[in-house]
Image 1 (cartoon, one colour):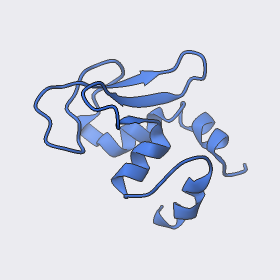
Image 2 (cartoon, rainbow, N blue to C red):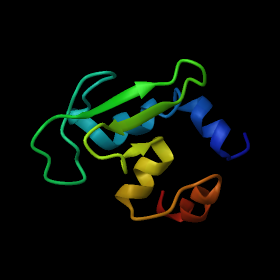
Image 3 (cartoon, rainbow, N blue to C red):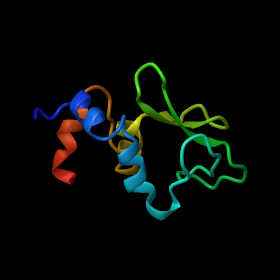
Image 4 (cartoon, helix red, strand yellow):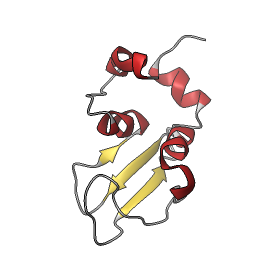
Length: 95
């Protein structure tokens, strides 16, 4: 299997498995509100949504528009990396 964005999304249920991995036991599930783990949040305005057309899962914070991320952007935020397109491959040594 070639390592690229599409193959990773396909093998992780649109990125859902990546979110489950990084949330661990605190995984909120799809379409359930939760606090943003990246800052001191007081109101649960974050959700994980699956785009019905593409099957890609997105992290969305309706209280902060800077947080509309697919699994690559989410992991990039955790490790302070830019993850647009296939640029995530540059950080593969972190895995």
